[in-house]
Amino acid sequence: MIDRFPILFVLCCALGVFAQAAMAQDIPSSDRQSGASDDPFDAEESVGNCVSTRQISAIHILDDRKILLEMSEGADIVMHLKYQCPQLKFHDYFSYEPTLGQLCAELDQITTRAGFHCDIGGFSKATLELESGQPSTP
Image 1: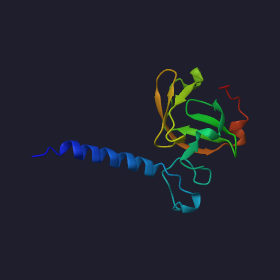
Image 2: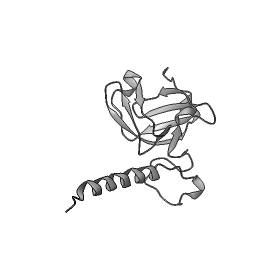
Image 3: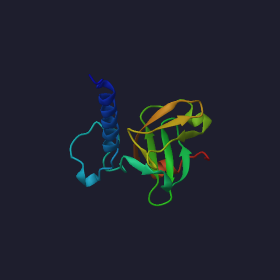
Image 4: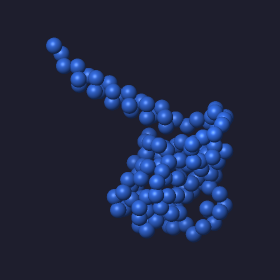
């Protein structure tokens, strides 16, 4: 009798990868359902689920939960972390490994110099209030 466990395990893993990739797809605001949402980012201010890393020209850490992404084309974007990321602002540094050249909410994470892994919660358009703050140098 053939052991089916390895085959089922591989199929389940592949299904999980495809499901994550499907969830990371950017949905245009016109295609979103109207109504109340548990999402902390207002649909009108949202810029999608993913940001192309090639478009990022500078990064400024605003605090332990928000990072300003200066974009080479278009409006600047604020990356919101799901939870407060310890020592992010203190060390003024983080690294990331993009998925197919993009940073995606609910999929990717950043890593602080202290080694903390922090999930990306979402992206929104930067307001003048955030941009006028004292950003740190990358």
